[in-house]
Length: 248
Image 1: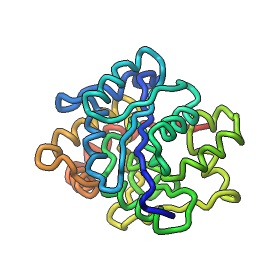
Image 2: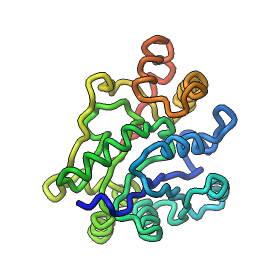
Image 3: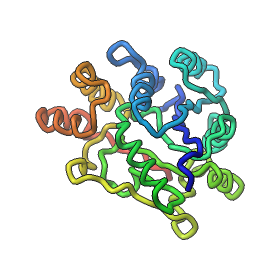
Image 4: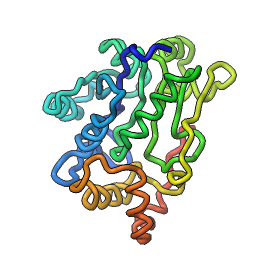
């Protein structure tokens, strides 16, 4: 697999969340959550381009405006057919490989992005994930796969679950695609820690983490987060009752 082929970080982001509307633009330390996420992704060395894949809904005009401000690419497509949106975004910006990211994971670690991309490029996998084997904290979530495979999947399935959840068909068919799991270092193996933002309790925890860690180092690591939460165990209770939404 050629490491020279363009790798894009594709962020699926829109304003129409049902559980916490407008969450990607909610402010933490005087910046939209999505902006903080993009700043962190920019710390990854193996990403060639960042693309926000948002919808054509007028509610998402603000997301496009933010992309211009941050000088990252933006593609607008179907609100419901996210697979089509991400595929068209990758093709428009000539991405040969896609790092699939979600706008509700603002704490994504640039070191983990680079490790996942490296593992993908150095091995014979069709897809590499950090979020399928319940090893990393939930919110250090990404998948890496070729645009060509997503194009193939787009022709195979019209299942609404697959169309809404971009890589679902790939990892649900290990008989067809070779799936790799980025090995999780023992010190990061904390799947009980929830660092994604679905509900207000999640947002409050993420806000506290940014407020306490970002000023000394905007690229604070997953290990820094774990140490902070272990030193402040009451914080782990903030979102312990939030249930991850199931795809089906």
